[in-house]
Image (cartoon, rainbow, N blue to C red; front, top):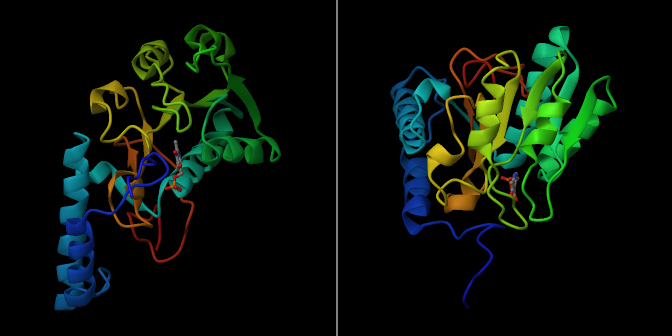
Length: 236
Ligand SMILES: Cc1ncc(COP(=O)(O)O)c(C=O)c1O
């Protein structure tokens, strides 16, 4: 069989499966445990965080592990909205976002927030001028994907970053699930991007892992609460 559906999911690399099996059998301690197996698990976890951070040219402190893209998108859209609610209730997403973003925005619109949608042109590219016209003093979040999951259009994240350079109070989220490993990181993770979502199964990892990039100092309300893992922002 020749598999041509790598945008839907990828085959896990043998080395990823081998590592998963080895760590799960030999270093299965809970990273929160104080005994040796726990501290060994913490070391592996933090080494993985550093590896992921290096991959996108960011600091390990800015990486938060999740279960994948759907969770990451839900967390950022809702978590930023809740966090910044006192400053405004207007959020903007593009018309061609993945349902993980669009449905999160729709959910917020049913719970007291106002959502505007940025139109795209006939080729599927976000209209940056239209975005400029949608910005308001109460806008708290803009979310635009890096690469569309259905037609592959690479969105003008650098142009949007330039537009938002003058809007420091607006959080900028990029769903980078379809971008990582396919286009240069600089094309979608500019210095202006505050949050970005990634999913492991789109680039040959085992299922059920992903991560969110959160720029140092940016605030977000936790989505999963519990025992305080991931710096109290994403309990497991
Ligand atoms: C652009 C985009 N965002 C989010 C997701 C959701 O990711 P996951 O399958 O890890 O939940 C996908 C998956 O198809 C996607 O293509």
